Image 1 (cartoon, one colour):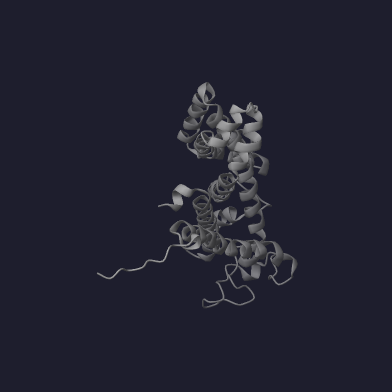
Image 2 (cartoon, one colour; image 1 turned 90 degrees about the vertical axis):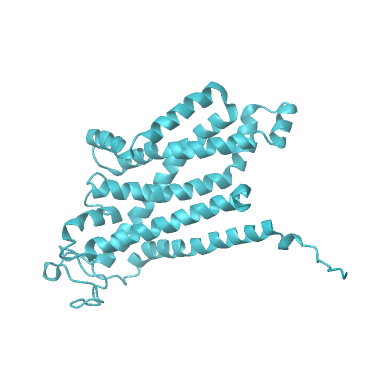
Length: 296
């Protein structure tokens, strides 16, 4: 019987290495459209290429250029005040992205710290924090938003407070479970054996090992913050005039769907695409930084 010689697999040909390369490729190609969107939103307004964004009551509810009656002077049409939809999308997108980024920061900051304490120290602290996390996740975010906004009014600081109160629990739960796994690793046990302080172990060794998870959580939280803001603005509880976001644009077009569907369609499409890309990027980052996911 003839023998079949098998070439040994090199490190680069190992299934784990190939999956790692695929995850890095996914992260790169998902980052590209997000960078393009951010560049368009922040650079286009200063180039002077956008149509005039002021009110023009003689051109109200103009359809997009690709429909009958449309004009390339307003590629995506105009709203009920004659304002250009494309210009509004670009200028409002800056506030939407800023809300997503700041909303993610105010949620993952306390969430990571609380989850780190619960996962590392365990005991009564873990029990109390776990109860708080479960209680927070059981409450619909809209009830928290209504309670705060009805008492304090609508403003960006209040919106960020709502995002922090509704977003920290999910971040804390993931951080807690990851910290529990890290605290049992050999390097942590070795540090305890040589007498390193708990604070040094937590902040100099455990926290840096959470960096990948924190980045992935922050990315996912950006999409969550944008969705929460859009939902609140749709209900009249989020961004209020004269400021404008994609959520407030969507809310302003809800009464025009039968006459001018494009007023609500394009901001709704922008929210969908941005949140989808952000969530896919966050999932790719979680897969890249979690070896257990790459083995699946």
